[in-house]
Image 1 (cartoon, rainbow, N blue to C red):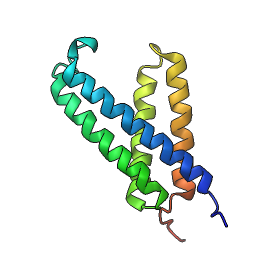
Image 2: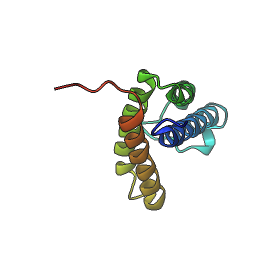
Image 3: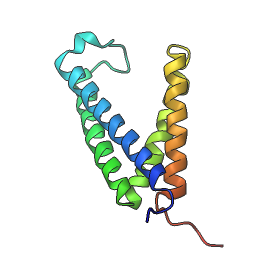
Image 4: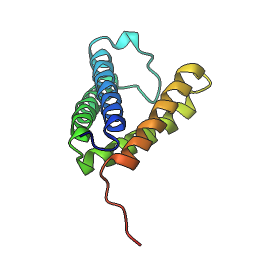
Length: 125
């Protein structure tokens, strides 16, 4: 018998793993082909940011796998990551409106799935 919310957790897990893969690929691109990415003050050292995004991609992928095993750390990490992603995409919504709205909507659904079915301990009152 299927546990309640297993579909939501599978969705959250797949989205986190896809985000991890995308971040890892972005990191490789930043290191190997930095001329393809715009370099300004925030991203002046693309090698550093490439390594950061590769590490984030690996952790995010591992968290996506751990979500299916109902690991509390993975659900908490996913909620924090998606929350930061929403803030980031609000800052760039003027440049990429359709993509930003799509990512924000997916992030909200992942947060819902993890907060509702992710196995986080709820404070009893």
